[in-house]
Image (cartoon, rainbow, N blue to C red; front, side, top):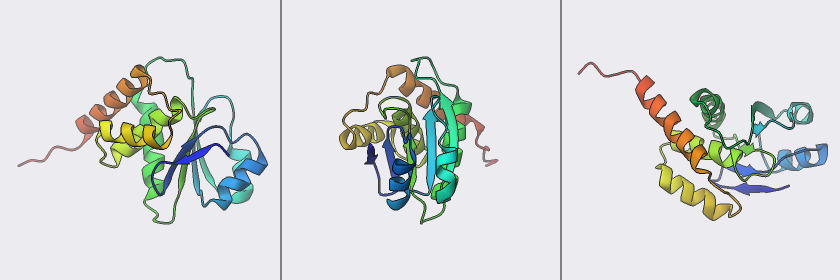
Length: 154
């Protein structure tokens, strides 16, 4: 399995594609999968293992990604990670563009600074290529989260 642990509980990588790889994920303790690839739906492979999957299909077309796409993934990830036993695998087909973009959004939603999160991801998984348009999509998503937070009345 092409999987890199970025933190103790968040991994990043390429496509799962088959039952043997899904079994390997289950054995490594993965409880949740955030699938960013448009090419393949992991849900049928995950079912026998009780792994929860969010299929968040995204084209790797180097066009800006809407905040809603990132929000859907971040909400799933944060809800999963509320359980201290949960381990999350974020992937696309190759683990180079779309999954790193989502991993960046998840880490930033967990209070990481964007530059520090990018450095961590790139250090752990050197094949990552942060496309400027995808990083900008994450920045826009983070701004949209701040704008939607309730304002204090003080």
